[in-house]
Image (cartoon, rainbow, N blue to C red):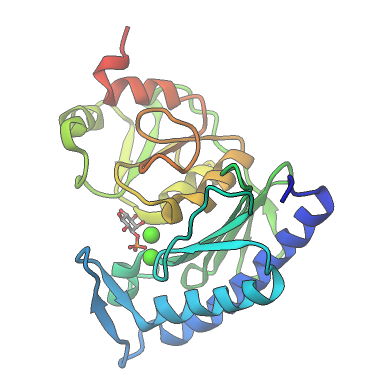
Length: 270
Ligand code: IPD
Ligand code: CA
Ligand code: CA
């Protein structure tokens, strides 16, 4: 398939809201229910019946509405993505550990990629936070709170790490960068482990200046990438590689990105 046309992009941007509605109906029905089925996956992380039902419903919908596109999802697998088909990337519930404990910071993440891997549509739907963030290539990034009219969002203007608010997930997965990251915490204005998709959406809204997670999969990041970039920010992995294909994430307002990369990667310093 060739590059998505502007007309097709508008249709895909509408469709992603239908997918989010579908997901919200399933996840909200199961959130905080007493009979939630929780299993442990081979990677020792939890998965619930809600994660599986949500991904299944999205896959069924896409099979009907976009039969020529591929679907890569956390719970039901990733096909060969090296051909010439577009592909949707689904994390049915990001923040499953929060979901099972009744913490409202969880969301369904949906993205659409061109065959070359460029993300052109992103949706983060977080019904327990009453919020939905979304973006499409060249259209800007938006938040809708409580189903109200969407508002355009933009990243912050903070230029120095000493004035910056940074959010991260936790201290797991940092490897040899851990000490550099811990040292940096005392030099930054404010740090909080807000975690999951929310850290990055707060960057897109300009409420946080930089968010970082050292170990992630494509489905954790694809939707975040385009929302942060369309809000005026920058999205790379922790080595500075642009996009969501690099197994880790730094999202920022763009102004702090290189300073942060240098701080956690001593080899990048002059
Ligand atoms: C998790 C979240 C979290 C990250 C973990 C992921 P899940 O996703 O994205 O922010 O730190 O590595 O596994 O499993 O709740 O979809
Ligand atoms: Ca996830
Ligand atoms: Ca998940």
